[in-house]
Image (cartoon, rainbow, N blue to C red; front, side):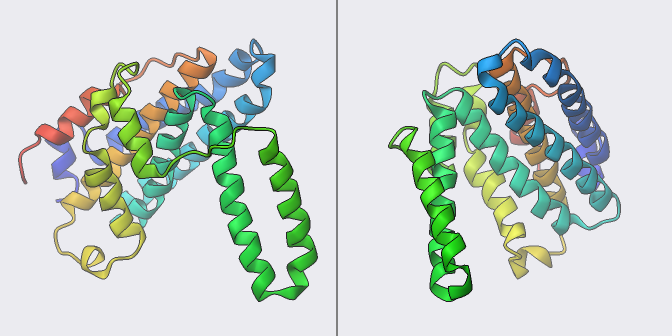
Length: 244
């Protein structure tokens, strides 16, 4: 039954994930060659390559989980790549986006390290040293960090400079919140007898993630990877699909 819902959209869950994997794998292979033209973005290209590669690995695991009927576990993995892809897409189309995103993660690490110092004195010296390094890193960039994921989606859908900006409408409430429900192990979602929605949101979350990352790579490094992952048509399938 879980495969029947994506089949209404012309593909099974596995087939749609295979399309995502194909595009991402080609991007991973081509990025090192393309990135050589952008010496000033070498570190950023390394980060993008690592993100694309990790997303490929995650999609492979998700595909195996969906095939074996472990839908909640697949949704948990999807939530991470979906959120990271939205942050990356936002970063490449926002002024000082990468630098603000870097500051956001520095601030998050500092919060964690400060709490670590409070509960474990043995780590105090190391944590203090790491905090100082992160604060120095933040001094190099903007004073404003990246916003919350909710605000990121809101900014993306309002950014008329993005050709497919309308495709981000309703994504936070429908896809992100659904994936969060599973990744937070909400018992009412995990043990719900109807599995089609879980598979649907997982597959579409993966498709959006792949589309956002490939678009980000194209925007940042001119890396064009032709594949059937245009964001608007993919989401049109979701918004227009009748109830099962």
